[in-house]
Length: 141
Image (tube, rainbow, N blue to C red; front, side, top):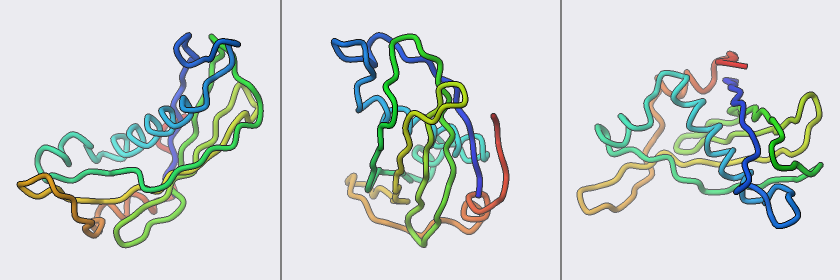
């Protein structure tokens, strides 16, 4: 399925007192990976929200930390869609320092619409977006 890579650097604020990456940073990076992937597919997350009142809330997430990352390390986050259901989609993320896998995780995102009062309702993922999610394509490396 569709895949994307984002290159990032471990910033000072991403680390704890020992200079080792603070685990919530992975969730931030997974979010960046997801948003970049969807935008690279040609689906503007901002347009979805402003024009169609569609949001992509996080429903489930997890991370496995395999090796420590330190301040100023260069990393790449590889994000891929691995499952598309009627109203949700799943992404798998891998974090590399060079060729070394240092962490991996997942996210499950909903496809929801906001009403005029700000309430959320899960709605089906449109067929054209579903096709983009399911394509065997690497968007950037």
